[in-house]
Image (tube, rainbow, N blue to C red; front, side, top):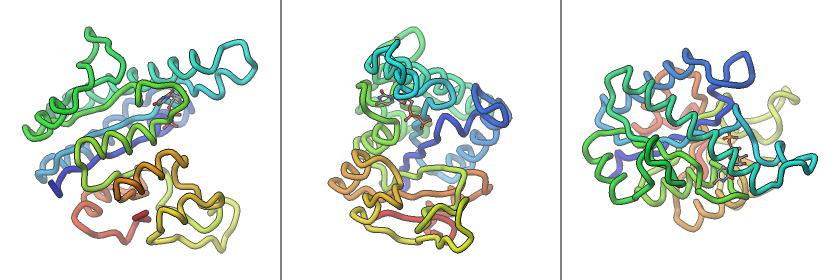
Length: 235
Ligand code: UDP
């Protein structure tokens, strides 16, 4: 199904000026962008990170909290974001289902790929929470995994930048945006798009990774319709 995509948002994207927590106006903006896709017949899966609440590596940095526990805390953070996203979508009249990699049935459905596909076929947005359900992974890897499982035609990483540059565009004025990048290039240190695990999984499954600016209204739909002028694509 060419019209099925997975969009990944970082937790930080939800935080707004505060730098932490959830800004409901940003949530509302994202929901509108997703509605735009659904209204155009696109089947949408979503993965949201948890960096606005807790990151495993940071929480475990001084050794008081073990890394495994810190990572479970991080995964719980993504569920908090997922509940919020589900609400924001429903507020716009879109049917959404939150599925979690760790069972918490009072809050969300457990992740069942066949059920997820069924929801998507019915035009429901499926939000995948709790990452992969395992410590030592990231939500970028979870997004790559879920995109592959649901048979998405691409994974769009919605970020604050227009794409991938040959060097840090915040530091260098002459940084050049790379329109198309190979998986092997993406694994190179200075142009890291995602973590190596996520890129390797995408490479194995020939899943195109698109890095795009989420703050450019209508960009997600443009990309899905084949206009890749305002993003970078790893394939
Ligand atoms: N996490 C994890 N396993 C996963 C996905 C996430 O342990 O499969 C934890 C990890 O601690 C991570 C945190 O959840 O730091 C939040 O996810 P991430 O850092 O990927 O969020 P983002 O940077 O996208 O906001």
